[in-house]
Image (cartoon, rainbow, N blue to C red; front, side, top):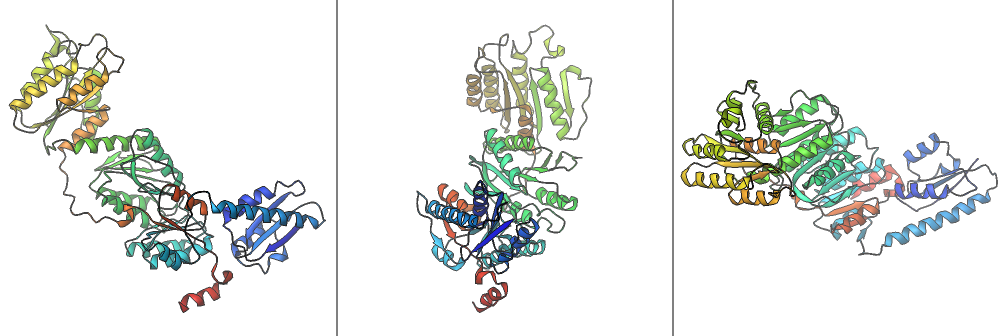
Amino acid sequence: MIHSFVKKGSFQDSVSLMLISRKLSEHPDVEEISVMMGTPANKDLLQATGFWSPDFDEATPNDICIAIKAETVDSSIVDVIVAALEEELANLAKNQGGSGKRIPKARRLASAVQRMPDANTVLISIAGEYAADLTDSALDRDLNVMIFSDNVTLEDEIRLKQKAADKGLIVMGPDCGTTMIAGSPLAFANIIPEGNIGVVGASGTGIQELCSQIALEGQGITHAIGLGGRDLSVDVGGISAMTALDMLANDANTKVIAFVSKPPAEEVRQKIIQRMKSINKPVVALFLGSKIDQPKDGNVYLINTIDKAARLAAELSEVEKDYETMNPVPNSKILGLYTGGTLAAETALILAEGMNAEIDAKHEKGTMLDVDGHKVVDLGDDFYTVGRPHPMIDPSSRQEEIMKLAKRPEIGVVLLDVVLGYGSMKNPAESVATAVTKLKEKRQEPINFIATVTGTNQDPQGRDNEIAILKEAGITVVNNLPEAAMLAFALITPRAETGELKPYPLLDGVKVINAGLRGFAEDLQAAKTAVVQYQWAPVAGGNKKLANILKHLK
């Protein structure tokens, strides 16, 4: 049996009412309780789920509809639940008072703007059927919008996103669960270290996992911009994705861009990739479910899992940091001088893949790669060890090769390995550093040395000690061979002039008007982000005709 009642004029957000519904349903004398605002969509839901009562016919979107499913026909259960509901609402109001700094409140958007004249974002988590109108009003005031709400029509989404793009703004959503801008959490978010990676995503948990994995790799982000799950559909066409990419392309602090989305429409995917290729920054793109025929397309790296995307973004982040401290040598050649055969072989494979070249399997005279002037040599090959010790014991063969570079101006980048451990020389880094220092005294043309170190701090030489010696000699030390290759390619590849950046003010930091879930405002305040709580309620009691008349009277 369904018992029901209506609490007039007491607007509450949907999440709070869902939690109250669950708690009240724990009462031993009821089967289940549904507590919802009397919006048209909620009334349809009450009918569809078997909780409908004629008492709800006259309920407005400002009224709470309470349906009690119970075996008993005794209507006194209503009084019990009414009392319990009043207690929960009182607790809710008390908790909203908070124990920290008071959050400014406003009952109209205009009042919220008056409370915070420099606001630049409205975060909307109200009933979806009302979100479009509020978004329209926010855009009219030149405010960016994040729509956490779902159940916004496709037509409204397209119209609002295009309106925002035309005004140089962005609409994130609808159904956008995650955005993090300059450390400010909008809706679901994590505390991620500051770094140089900018993230764009049409998947809320995808953004969170990608950012978390980036943090686990020891890197951080500038911003993470959510789009909403439908943005990359054929109908929407990636309107907000294009804006978000433009925002990060023009952000001086963002050096690497990572993009994640659920399976997109193929034509939109291609459109997004073309935009990525026009950006003068490396881009890691993860389109879940898309087949990867070409892992690298210009500056765009296509990846198929979140962990790989995070790892590559972190490596590119390090590459960009190192690049800024080194001497770019456009169109010069790469030389690899390795003491470890496997390290030389892997480096050769990575470089060959990056150049779309084939490797000669014969490896004559220890040459692992010889393509268009780029060369990788295994100095531990038999050709170099006839009558002399292995270069991990005797560094002279590599020192000689380094000194030859004084007369080879075409070489702009040299890749090296330093292998530690038992059996190796006592101080392999010192031998490399000495040769590099002597070379730089004789050579006038710029040259870059990039090294990887194989070993641990527990080895006799001590990894950190060896790295310090290499860095003191001006040798850049990277974490692994792929990172060394990417840095080498970055140094020899000409980069287009960035031109004058046109930064988006939003990325300087958000100042938020929060319409809906108060918890979002509390999180923003905890993150030291300026926020005003807009205590939204349906205009004219939810009467759309009257609300439209009032809108035109303003």
